[in-house]
Length: 350
Image (cartoon, rainbow, N blue to C red; front, top):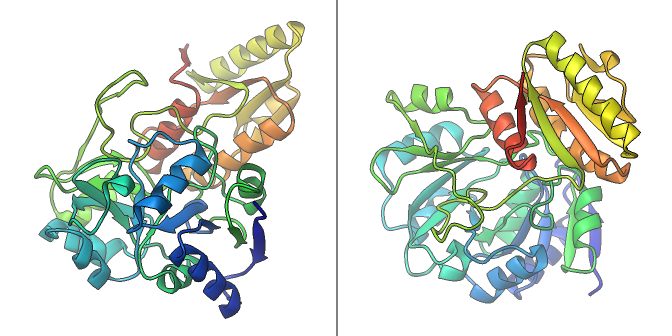
């Protein structure tokens, strides 16, 4: 397949490119496109054959639900059976933006899109290129992240092209993603709102908006589980670099000393080594590649850089990666969620 590649910016959206992307999607094809979170791999959400193509292009298990992207509340009303008051409140506060909510679906949404579930995950992206394309496609675009299943999600078009060139019809290069992590997912189908995937919209932000407690699903569904995942990213290993990633937890001095020891052992064994550090600690490590995700305590910087750094380690052929841990609250919860999944929950506690 010949993959068309177009370059756009939110300040200069070529209407011809958007129309071409919309035509491809309406015809059942696939288009990768930028959002404020990560790049998405889009297909017509109401066409079961398009959703099948998405799973095939990604090598994604077909019981892993896709997120339906829309641009207005009228579109939401047509695909769900009801909109709880809490969901309306969150939509007013955080849409368009990096928040996905799960609702009971209408029959118009095929089970191929929802991973066989009676629920549908929906989000309204704030990226202007994404919004224009969704409208051009008819208003409903199903889109997981635009990477091969299990790989780190792409936040720049370079890695979309690496994974998807020749697999899909079109890639829209819209520059760097702003947030760098996938959207927060909140489930409204089981009574009280529950976070199924942490993201930029934090638990604290949700509770402030709703004036009530929001729970977090702590269930760990391993790869052998026969339980269908309720949201993207809950069941299968995600975000993983090609090299083996280990998270090291402890005091700053203890982590630095331990990581340098692990790096030395790995280097002596012939492995190329990498370290994920902060601006404050990057000079303390000795490895083939030491990368800073930003300043300590600035989880927004860490979130923005994390997936790109994991991809860069792949580019450099790094085989053993060691990472500092980060605060597990606020946006840090989303960062640690992604790191733990990328590491296969391999953590050394000092």
